[in-house]
Image 1 (tube, rainbow, N blue to C red):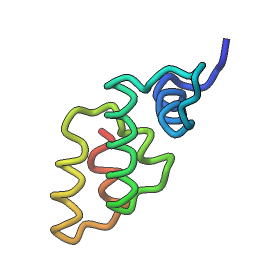
Image 2 (cartoon, rainbow, N blue to C red):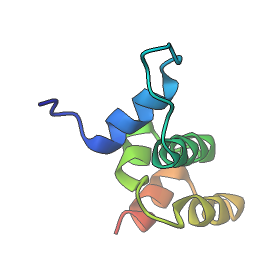
Image 3 (cartoon, rainbow, N blue to C red):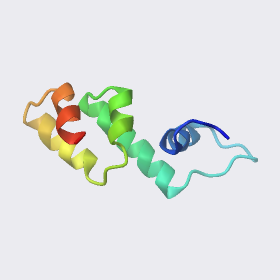
Image 4 (cartoon, one colour):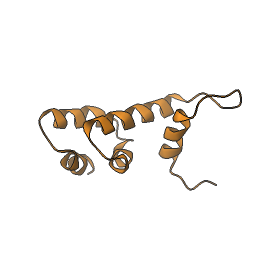
Amino acid sequence: MDSTPYVLRAFYAVGVPATKHAQKPTEFERLMKYRFEELLAVGLAPDQAIALIEKPDIVHEARNLAVRGCPPQIIAKLLGD
């Protein structure tokens, strides 16, 4: 079995072009991709985004902190608890 965390497999599955043998991404996979991209846009590093990606309101919370001038490293620490 693949040792890659499920969230990462889900994220990478979304980025793979669909072929006639590939399955369409699930809603969960699309959601994880959206969150990942939004967290990167806020300035988080990929590993930080992956660590936070499963939290339900993470994008909203990260954006609020970023708008207030909070640096990405601090955002990751504050939201990582």
